[in-house]
Length: 191
Ligand SMILES: [Zn+2]
Image (cartoon, rainbow, N blue to C red; front, side):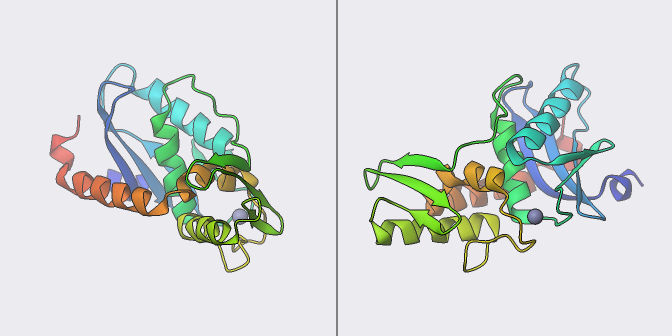
């Protein structure tokens, strides 16, 4: 069965506005490898899937493995990869896939947030820094010292998730709503 070959679906964009509202999924295969896939026969579907794969490789520093993607460390980084896919799908084809910086202006505190090897700095605002660190931990499944379980720093993943960590409650709500919508899209209804 085809489903067994492509792996288990871990994320779904039910309607991609950048490519005729096609449905695109992220599938996880054994060996912590990921597949971007669509069942759509839209004429631009293949190019769109190719761009998303390219964007995930660029934004998240993932390596190509045949038609699949994996992290160089060999770990799955499931939560971060799921979000990397969603961020890649937000880009139109040709959008910038350069890794995002580890600093960002935070409107809420009026401070510049920087993630360094020693943690999150919010120009002395420790409460805000802690809240953002908490957001990063949740979004990327980091441990207490803000490290990835594989021991590598993965600055690309951290930079990608940093803007989201500024408002982690909103992003979790948004994802929950999207997941509910995804469930409602039966395979037979997918274009
Ligand atoms: Zn890793």
